Length: 128
Image (cartoon, rainbow, N blue to C red; front, side):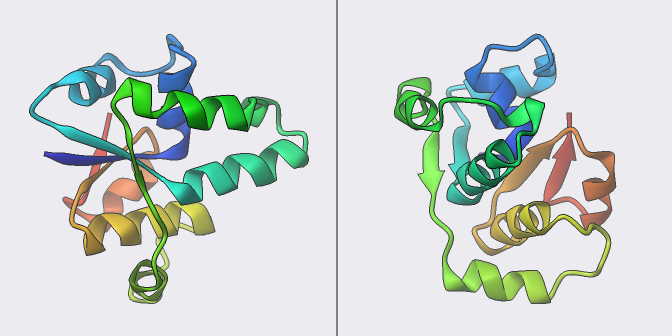
């Protein structure tokens, strides 16, 4: 299964946080799965860190260099992903989450998240 981690799960995975749900950790570490992170998540972290959000305070350069060693592959943001956002119903207002949903649909892959509201986008989203 091809997985895309939402931003919070990505942060928790990198930090080896107890907040990362066991189900998410198992899916990420399963050798049969291909785990990805979006370049949009790093952009979101950068923006929210500059806004002094406590939950986004991380050394982004160090984090980025750690991701390949964790077996995570980068998913760049492409124009077809941006266009995909326009086709989504207005369920969620966060532009980063909407982009992650669009990326999951276009690629296709399963978006792993802890945000139950995103589950309303259908089977492309898995809440853990």
